[in-house]
Image (cartoon, chains in turn yellow, red):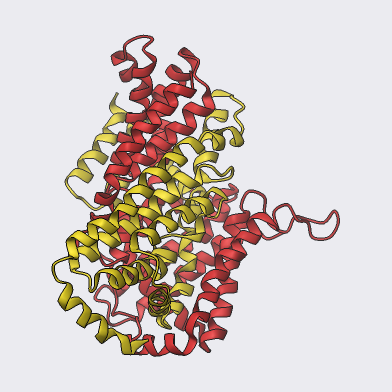
Length: 239
Length: 324
């Protein structure tokens, strides 16, 4: 029973907004000690756990490329490009990104999107340019809403796409865990197959919500239309 | 053969190089703490190679992890002065380079795609060693794609000095801060939970409360439990061993003869519904809010709550329909 104190530490720590890294550290040490490990064994558990989970942090390797391109105007160019492609609405841009993210993740290409790799440099500028073209200058509130939904399209697409792929962490975790613990013989392909129904539901539900975003934006931004046209004109010389 | 450990060394070297830049950045009020945190992370990435193949003791790496936790947890890390170029310069550069700027950005995933599919299982010469380490092709593709994209990017922007890229990347790294390390530490916590027997204990409690033989109640408890534990821990990976040892395997599969593939695959996805709504999943929910410069750091979560709720119901229905 007493090993469950670790879970309590996590709940209490996060509920009281302590630093998450500290909460995880304290919960890990406490659980290990209460579970009967010696202090040395606890340190070893942290060490081996870290060594075998390094793949989780590997995405950071793309940051210099993104930083370099942003320094040379990647976001600005995406805006310019989107200004030319006037037809797509913000909701449609995000819905297309959702489907793209799901499909690429389902082929195991989780590195194709992501907040640092795609949402910030590409998706948000595109969606904002589309929204500005249609509704005029965005209010802070509309911008916040749009960016929040851009982040959500990335997450929903990733979570409910990647599990359709055989060699993704979550699938390998499932097979590795039950085959080792219960001597089962589960194949990754069976698990990936049964991730598809939920993936389809995710596309339909979140896709519909993203498309509805255009109506919400139109409603929020219908009032200050006059000022908006002036602001768009100011931005034009930058093209 | 290109090994995944080489990629970890590259990532480690990058962290160390960025830490060196941080140490001399007078614009950062906590430059030594920041440099120590990221430098230690880089060194741990490299040392981890020998811990993973069990040729070096794991305890020193554990000490390093706890040190990093303390450095970040007690506020010794900080951000330097902005490394971003002036807006006018970016606009001018975008005007000069135009859409060619997308070439490196697209090269990265395309190379990763090629490595993950075309180069998978390719041997160097007939009967020679494999080109890419099995099981890590996509991960290696990400690394190779980054190098290719960086090369193209430097040529394209006529940036002679690769340190400029490193400095720009460091700006993004500092913007994310220690939150970048949280998911990996949660995976570590999950493994500690498992070896300390947390799952067995939760199982004793749930069997006590679950009505015997009620399939749908058990399905709902497993799915809701996965979501709830994920919300608490911020990581479905950490919740999975706990909930599966407690309910998924002993009750749904052994006792009620559920199809293991359906139960476990959908159970993990129920956990992902929890990931969508928890601030604990910092890299998915809070880091993007920071990256997108949102005033409300819970903006992405608010956008995701209705979808997550609907999908959790879908998961319970799918598991009830197809697993039994």
